[in-house]
Each structure stands twice: as structure tokens, then as C-alpha cells.
Length: 427
Image (cartoon, rainbow, N blue to C red):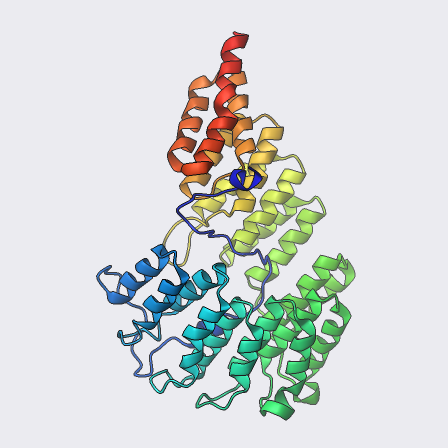
């Protein structure tokens, strides 16, 4: 029953990745923007395009063997190799099906296939896909084997990122240390940033600080640190609550004339919110926006969480509304809330008996294909009924019925069935 109560819409896979509020990592795939002939790799939006049809077929296929066959049978399609969404979708489906054998079956041949792009970005993508499925041994094997791919900091950083995201910090450090002697690769700024991140996540914040100092002084021909380098250590000090060191890093960022980005501001905003000074965090939010820096989901998460902890729900809801109205570079409006934001707001609104606000936020979460725990929705229904807002309660019940299917809908009916009966009997 518990599993059913937590279920999201049955027809959709989870759209919520593990939250990394202050991730300073690069996207290893980002270097592979073009096909070998220099053409745009992005397929047209027409659903008749074979790659889009293939994605739809793979998305709806439940048999992992069939998923692998569909993928492999389309290697001749124009722009196949440059379709990152297709590769990611297929590996994700096979990973969820717990079929590492099929993941290797579809990816291994690309390392020797003469028709594969011979650009390092493609190798970095394959390494990243192995790592995303937890196949780090396969990723290391692919990195070490002789191949026509040029290897530099790009592919090294893809391998190191795999170790980082899978929590294998010792292998991250040993591979980094062996890069020059074993692989003839001099780690660049990106690889150093990944190492810094690994040190911070592994609780080695002072070692990360020492490395950052060495980079900033140019010792041992180390690359110059970027804002990402400083952000990584800044976040490390934030997590450990070391305010003096946090301020020192901020001062160095200013002294070096580095341009603060959304991650830098997120760290500063989170710090104020943790100290119960969310009004200062919102002032900083306004400064960030005035500089043309676009807020992220994490920006709003920290502000909404801060106001909720301070029992200032009106301000929390105000930030939620700002979130929906935020302008994006693409020209579209709104930053999409994640499940954590919806759950946090709803629980606090229920606790304060603000059921009208809870109702519209709950309905919006359904529109985002993210359902709240059934018990929370039940609490909203019961609260509305107690306030004699029976029509609103019935509206919410019907909305739930429309989006649920199968066992999830049966579970909802069982939970909600006695609410109106109890109300009728008390009148």
C-alpha cells in the first residue's frame, strides 16, 4: 500500500533527478555539438522524423530486449550518432530494467565501429552513459583501451565525473593522480574542479582548500581556478557551517574579479536562509536578478524553505509565484517547481490550515505530472470540508480520480471514501 500511495502518474517515468543544489560540474556531453561534417545535430521538431519516431517507440516499449533492438536497428539513420536524447533515453530505460548486459551490447560496439564519430566529445558521451548506469568498470575499460579517439581533459573529466557521481572518491583521486604518468593527459581546470568536488563531498574540505590555493598561485603549473573552482569550495564550507572560511572564499572571488554566477548566489542565499534571515536572502535574490543572472530551481527552493521555517507562508507563496513568472533566456516564462517544493509548501499550508492555497498548489502539481502523497491530499479535502467548502473538496477529489489509474486509483478511492460519509453523518 505504501508504494501505491507514493506513486506518481502511472503513465510517466519519474522526471525528478537527484537534487544537487549547488552542482558545479560541467556536462561532459556539452563538447559534442556537431556531427563530423559540421552540421547541426538537433533533429527537426517534425514528429515524422525517424529519430523522433524512434524515441517515441523506445519510450513506450516495456521489453528491454526490444528497446535494445530498436536502438541498434537505427544506427544507419541520418544524425543517429549525434542524438544525445536518444542515447540517454535508451540507456536510462535499460538501466531501470536492470539490464547492464544490454547497455554494454548497445554501447561497446561504438568504440570500434568505423562509422562512429571520431571526435572526443563522442567518447566522453559514451563514458558518461556507462557511468550513469553505474558501469564504471566499463567506462574505465573504454577510456584505457587503444582507440582512434584523441584523449584529453575532456574524456578524463567524463571518467572522473562518473567516479564522483557514484561516490567512488578513492578511484577519482587515483585516476586523477595517474593521468599524466599513465595516460599522458595533463588535467585541466575541469578535471581539477571535479577533484575539488570529490574532496568536498568526501569531507576533505581543507584538502580542497589547499588545492584551490595552489591553483590560484599557479604552483606546479596547475591551471588557474575558475568561478566553478571557488563555488565548489564555497559550497563545501557552507555545508560544514564554517562561516569565517565561507567569507574568505567570497572575498577572494571579489579580489580576483571573478563574475559570480547563479551557484555563487545560491550559496549566499542558502546561508541567509539557514540563519533565519530569509528577507536578506530575498534582497540578494533581487540583486542577482538585477544583474541578469537567472535564478534556478534551487534558488527558489532555498528561499521557500527559509520562509517556511520562519512560519512566513505568505512570503513563501510569494516566492512560489515569482518562480512561475521568472523570465527564461528562451523567452518562456517560469521556472518549474520540483516535487520537493510542492511537498514542502503543501505540508506547511496544511499545518497552518491554509487549505485554499493548498488546493491551488495541489492542482498545479497535478498539471506538472507530479502528485503529492495521498494522505496530504486527503488532509486538504478534509480541511476544505470542515470549512464548509464542500464543492472545492469535491473538485479536488475529481481531479485526483481523473489523473490516477489502476491500483493507484483504487487506493485513492479507499482513502477518500469515508470523508464525505463522515461529514454527512455529522450534519
